[in-house]
Image (cartoon, rainbow, N blue to C red; front, side, top):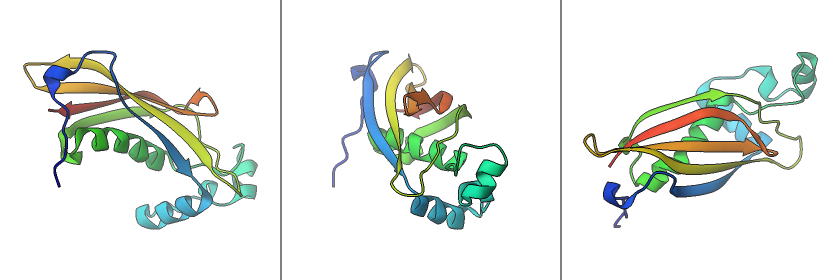
Length: 142
């Protein structure tokens, strides 16, 4: 299978290179807890989560962060092309008992370094119209 990889010379700052809607339901939280070993009750116990002041059960921050950068990995055509990734958690993603929480992710070229052959891709991740990741930036070697 041939993978179409982006070409640095074809990119410009401001280009939207990918968008995706991420879906988080309670089953996904359980699977992530098992894979990560993070069984904190705020991720599965409604009464506990609200008891500590949260609006409900919340998605793991690292799950949200990892799923968001997957948008860039897919665009790059190689997860190994992402050589740096940083973000801040700004708001929790509340996952309802029934149904799912939807996080909208947009990946935009924020900077290009022709000498290093890298593109900085800025991610905007929003839940219910509010950013859940702040200063989310991935550096991709092209």
